[in-house]
Length: 257
Image 1 (cartoon, one colour):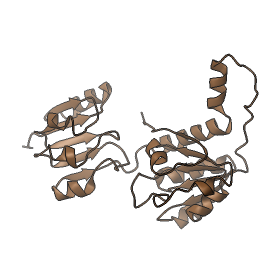
Image 2 (cartoon, one colour; image 1 turned 90 degrees about the vertical axis):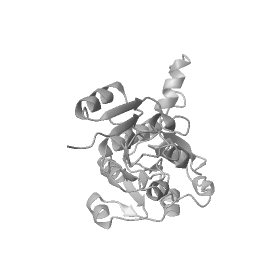
Image 3 (cartoon, helix red, strand yellow; image 1 turned 135 degrees about the vertical axis):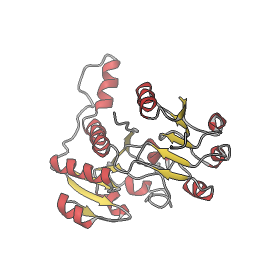
Image 4 (cartoon, helix red, strand yellow; image 1 turned 180 degrees about the vertical axis):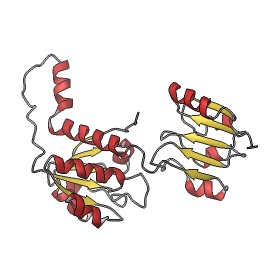
């Protein structure tokens, strides 16, 4: 007979709670609506396992309050909100969902790119003010423009595929280039500085981890100021991480249904 586990879930919606109650009925489940942090970790202090999402901070302060914890499952691809070193020190196993929602995020990235190219945000705000003119709302075509993709994991590669459908030129930068995929999808790997200088739009698909952030060492605004760069990120934390660029920018965290 399997051991009955006590599992704490953070950040769940009602339909998710119903699913886990059905699928894990033999275990003791604790549901906490808000993200995990140092302030509410004690509510899970008897739990063997945690299931969290991207807004939870599974860091040293919270982990110190969870003496029985043996396993953390983050229900996302990104795991920069989990302190892996501290978990390893405490003998806590960590898992993520490595290929979760790549098409969902890539499609939303292009929704943001189209919002920039067609000035959707500006047109909505102008309409709300009762101004129905087209003054100042001239956009630009994506065809023939250059898209710079920072990070060519599952999501970045899907973005490259979509970009080619728009007949865009694609440049990419990654700490681990995938030359086979570059040939297959028709894009070129270049240094990060070159990508900034030569792209009309840059989309960022990297976690907020020092080992992969290309702009971690110094601000890059002088490079950006040389061209009318647009920056699109599907994680707002990326733009805040020392990427104070003089550019048009939009960002969003994407949640897959």
